[in-house]
Length: 200
Ligand code: AKG
Image (cartoon, rainbow, N blue to C red; front, side, top):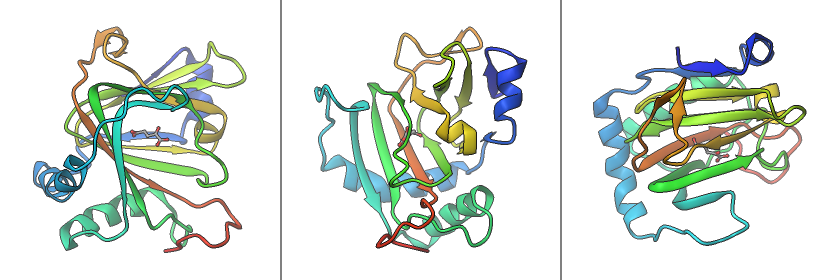
């Protein structure tokens, strides 16, 4: 199982709105994405000490144009994550979180992100934790294996914070998931009615 939670009720609440697909991309496809991303990321420095940041120990980039093979991989992500015709952010968000880095609990801004977030995990496994904003004791953990895809929709995206656990706290179902450097490649739908954004 790649999704566990604090109880059956919370799992029922997010069922169909949290999805993890193991081995969504092949090793070859991962290499191809890394080949395009590493030169861009290497030019940036990891950021650590911004106290107000949701993310620690990261660098990031956004990309709209990709090699043909990477475009095909990303199209596959879009095809499974978004129903046909869903307005999507043309820019793909790439987040490179260092071994010691982590993502604090947050809800993506409703100004910039619609009802769906879909992310590929490269290089290292990690644990994503969702916590209900209404009741902090309701949580759901997602095991994000290397080369897997996760999708958060609706309630899972709006009513729960999400975070990526840091080294030392990174456990899934009681088993430690050692953290390494992880790159995520994230596609998002657009909020309805957003003007002036990049539509696909
Ligand atoms: C976000 O960008 O809102 C995230 O939390 C990214 C999660 C990830 O790295 O997959």
